Each structure stands twice: as C-alpha cells, then as structure tokens.
Amino acid sequence: MTITLLEALTALTIDHLKPLLAFTPNAPKVIRKAELVNALHDALLGEGLPALWKTLGARQRAAVAEALYDPQGRYDAIRFAAKYGRTSSLGNDDSHYSYRNKTTRLGLFIHCLGGSDDRGVPSDLRTRLLTFVPPPAPLKLKTYPEPFEVAEQTLRLTERDALQELAVMLRTIERERVQVSEKTALPSAAAMRLLAGKLSRGDYYPVEEAPPPYECTIGPIKAFAWPMLLQAGGLAVRSGSRLALSPAGIKALSAPPAEVLRTLWHKWQKTTLLDEFSRVDAIKGQASTGRVMSAVAPRRAQIEAALKVAFNDCPQGEWMALGEFSNFMLAQGLQFVVAHDPWKLYLVDRNYGSLGYDGANGWNILQERYIRTVLFEYAATLGLIDVAYIDPTQTLYDTDFSQMWGADELDFLSRYDGLMSFRITTLGAYVLGMTDSYTPTIAPSDAALSVLPSLRVNVTRGTLSAEAVFLLETWAQPVHAGSWLLDAQKALTAIEKGHPIAELQRFLEQYDDLPLPEPVEAFIIRCGRDASALKLGDSAVLVECRDAATAQRIAAHPETQPLCLLAGASTLVVRADQVDKFRAAVHLLGLGLVG
Image 1: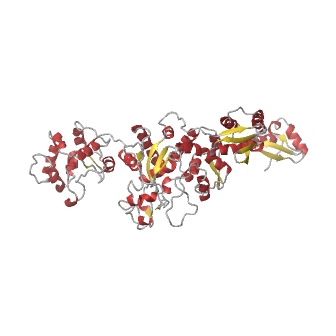
Image 2: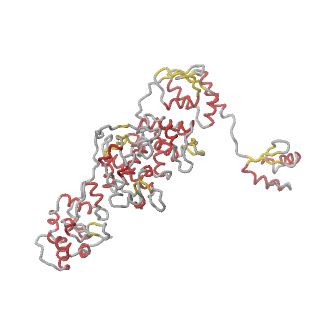
Image 3: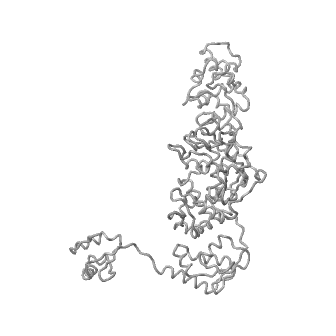
C-alpha cells in the first residue's frame, strides 16, 4: 500500500503529532489536529527538509536510507537489526502509553503505511528525500582467515571425504543389507551404525551403540544423510525394507565423483523425501494435522542463494561464522518460512511449551536451526563446505533457547547447535555453479599393487583406501590380507549388474607400474565377451494349442508365422507386445484365443 505524507500524518493522534512537531525548527504553537498535520506537512516537504534530515543520528539516517532504497519504500526492522546489530526506535507506534513509547525524530520520516507492521516512507516524502539522501552502504559478510578458536573444537575438511565416501556408500548398499523404513525411507539404527563404520573418518560425533533412554543424544549425522541423499538422487532404491543400487547408481560408480555429488545436491534441492527440520526432534508437533510446515524447496533455494552471494562477495577460502551468515541472510532479504502455524509446534508439552508464544518462534529458533541442519548434515556431507564445530552441549549456557518453557530438560535444541563456522570448498564452488570446472585436490595414494600372471593381485606398498578395496572385491576373491585372486564368477556377476570391466582394467593399471600380464588381459577380454553371450529379450507368453497339428498350422501360416515360434509339440511362444496382433491373425484362421 502506498500513501502520501498527508495521509500518514492524518492517521496519527494528537499525542503522536505534538512531539513530532517539536522536532521541527521554529515549530508553531498549535493544538488542533488539523493545524498540527499542516504544520508537519509543510515542514517535511518544505525547503528545510535537508536541514531536518541532518538532525537525525547516524543509525536513524541509516534506517531512513534503508527504507528509501527498498523497492517498495518499506522499513524492515528485522532486516535492519540483522545488518546494523539492533533496530532503530521509531516511537510513533500504536501504543497510547507515552511512557512506554517515547517518540523519536525517526518518526518524522518513517510512518505506518497500513497494517501495524507495515512501515516506510510516504511516497511524496520519499521522492523528495531520494534527491539528496545517499544509498545505504552495501552489506558485507565478515569473514575470517581461520575459524574462531573455541575450546574442544573439531575442524573437518570435507572435500576429500565426500569424493571417497560416495563410492564406499554405493558399494556398501550394493553388497550389504542397508535397511530403511518402507514407509518413511529413513535408515534403520543398524543401517546407520553400518554406514558410520564405513565413513572415512567416522561421523561428526561418536555414535553410541545403545544411547541412554530419555536423554538428549546427538546420534548419526553423515550416516543418516548418505542414504537419504542417494535415494533422493535416484542412485539407491528401496527393495522391500533394504536399499539396492539403481542402474543410475551402478553407472555412478564409474562416473567422475564431483559430477555425481553435484547431481545429488541439485536433486536434493527439489526432493520431498524429507523435511530437514524434522531432524530437530526436540521440537514436537511437526506432523500435526493441518498445514503446519512450509514447503521445503523454497527454503533450500534461499540457503543456496545465500551461499552463492557469500562466495561472490567474500575472499575464497575464508571462514564464516554460522550466526553471522544467518544474519546475513536476513539482512539480504533471503528470508523463508519454516512453519505456517508455530502454535502447533512445542517443546515437551503441547499446552505450555508452544512455540506460538512471543520469542519462541523467532528466526534464531526456527530458520537458523534449519540453516544449521541443511549446512551441517547435507552440504558438509557432500563436501560443499568445511566445518568447525563443538559438542552441542557446550553451547548450553550461551544459547538462545534456555529461557523457553521446557528447555530446562534439553541439553541442546538441535544436534546441529555445535556448528560454529564454515567455508565453501573448491568442490562446493563447482557444485553451486560458481566455477565451470573442478580439479580434485586429493593427495595421490601411496599404495602399489603387483598383478601376477596367476591372476593374483597383491599389495606391495602402502594401504589401499576403503574405496579401492571395495572395487577390487567386486572382481576378485580375497585370499588373505593384502591379496586377492581375480575370479570369473565374480566378474560375470559384476558385469551382469552393469559394472563395466574397463573399470577393473583402469584400476589395475593405475596401481601397477608394469604392463598387465597376458593372462590377466586375456581374463579381462574373455569375461567381457562371455558376460554378454546371452541377453534377455522382451517378455513373452506361452500359448498352449489343443493339439500338435493346430500348433504346426499356426506356426506355418503366412499371417501368424511372423508372430510366433514353436516351443514344443503343441506350444507356441508369442512376444507380450504382439499378443493382440496374434489374436487378430488367428481369427483369420477361424480360431480363437482364450485366457
């Protein structure tokens, strides 16, 4: 809604108008409302406006400038506080209690434009001010060459981990029983323990085998994220209550890992498989009836947009404090809604701990917790950001939720509260589309293999990574520690599942400096040829004829002969997609097909 200065002043009461007029030079002594309105109108739109503007304090001038250069001329107190540290008092709000609401000079310029929370500069006053008021200083996100030093802080560089763990997670799903819920797709506790043991350096926090009941436990983070990301990306599919690799998942094993990780991030942006905020399990009521939680895709889009802005505006490789990044999103207008109805969300008790009460559903409680979840559990797991974090219980006495009803029973509001700072990795810049190409920064392996004519493969130096062991065991049988024997049956099975045998050849050539022995090359050629000796054709149906003579007649007739084959004395085989044509053809012979 756009209103003029006269309309804005007319909407104020005499109690608001009098102190505002006192701020103008040579204020006339008038008491009637119409006179007060006219005097203020003349003072604000007259020649003395620049001088009146100069009477504002620095923070008040910033508030007016922010409103002037807003596309709609609005003053957003939340965005202002995020950018400047605290809001600037207006004074002339709807309160009739002057002792609670001291009018300030800012009230001369920023007025109510309609609703109680809709404030800004009236249109004609804005036009005048724009002729001499400079635009506000652009917001810069403060960055640091190193993460903040915090006691018992852990620094996790994620890029190398993500590139290695991708193949390990895929091969684990291919070979072992990774159970998920058929209803929710969430991994079971046993599945997360299994996957946690396969991670390059374990999960972010130790995973307790049997956490104490009724206590706040951090639990798995990466081990939860990987099966969700792989399902959302279409690389893993549910087969009953366990995961299996899809054809795309098998292809991903031989694809460049950075490309696969980029695809997983982009597909995660649109998935409805999970609302990440559900992982903030201390906040109950998220599944209440009605439209409680907002759509997830717009939330993720705002976080991704903020990461891109931060990458462009900040020196590469610099660290960002999580809290400052959250305020940066607010100040940039990259806001989003987590819950449509916070009254249905609660801590501990639905009646007393509702998040609908003032101060219980602010940006720091809902939106910032969501930002933490997306960054810590998904962006870091995929290698987009490096993270510095502490145990979330260490933030208990320096937190924003401890005064909420029921919070005295909580060690932390979310398992992600320990995330202190992060920085965008080289891989993250590529995944976010900020760079056109990606060059891995992974250190070369010190391991070496000896591939023998007997088809034995032995480790001669160093230690193979978990990913390399997984790949080797796709094609070979373990003999003893550090030794495998190439196996034709395993090779045939791998090729049938979609693994190209060129994957084995590249692997062996990479780790052995000598040319592959002739028997090994022959093994690779033979397996590649024999594995495709047979191919499943299209599905077909068996047609049982009343006798052999009828079967012979149909198989030999010009109308039906192209559509069927003899499969016994009185049995014909017809392709499933040709059954209707076959039925029409036998009708021409005066015969019918039942069933």
